[in-house]
Image (cartoon, rainbow, N blue to C red; front, side):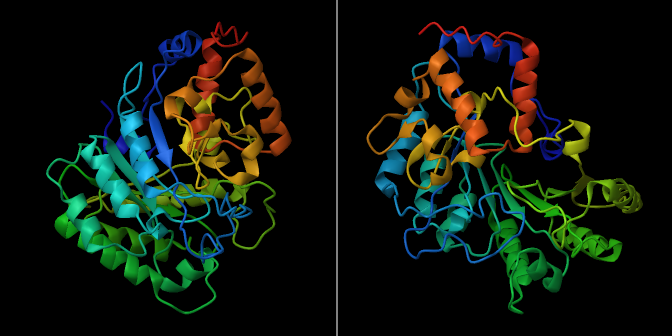
Length: 375
């Protein structure tokens, strides 16, 4: 059973790769998790921030959406499949924040009701009274979590890192919302924070202040890391920390963490790109659809969280407005899988770090090399 520390540092193993490969070939695999990325229904813009490292920055807003009732039906569907249920349900956003979705609380409540380990990835700019009621629910499942992108220790650097041109104090608002959650949450819910290091927010004094502030708020984890390179990213872009400069900063942060021995929070700094040799945009062959499929804001089922937008419509698994989740999930054979591999290269989709690791581990089993699907 993985610990919160293992999950925060990419060291938890959720999948037994040899067994999972066999299940893919036998059409009996079940995803480790399903991610839902609802998009706001009102307005043209998906997000009001302009984060330069946003992997969905070029996402087109087609305007297509599932109804909230259909979302709730899908949550019920994935709780009971022909080969077992999905255990973890993630609420996140593609080029946006899940809390921007007008009916977010209904999805959150439905996930808890159907006994999912419920996680969410958010900037936590706003929360409702209903949200606080749900996060305090005595029936919420153990290992559920709220993961918050903090990304700064001062309001000025927060705004610079997120492309905010006004002087609004966003960071203080996030801290107040964390405090509200901490005062209400069930002990089964982890409150995790992440801090992406840029040239704007990486002074040791600011990092130290962030550690102290978030530890005083009682968050369970604080993970420092570096932004993942999006498609068409310019490495010379202002704010980026070059790969060759990372190691010296990592050493300084590790020394700082070591000095702060008495903390309420597990603090770490990770560089999975170096550790796992993630030096390319994608891992082909890609088996993300079997482990971490995602429902895009347009209501289509996609291979993963980073390809779940209309930009990658040609490789979508299908339309969930008219189709059952499991029918789409198990609709594959050798030709379909090979076609999707070619589309991934053409569309320039990319793996997130967790899925890159999963793809490499599945490839290492050698069991999927010939794609000998029998269906």
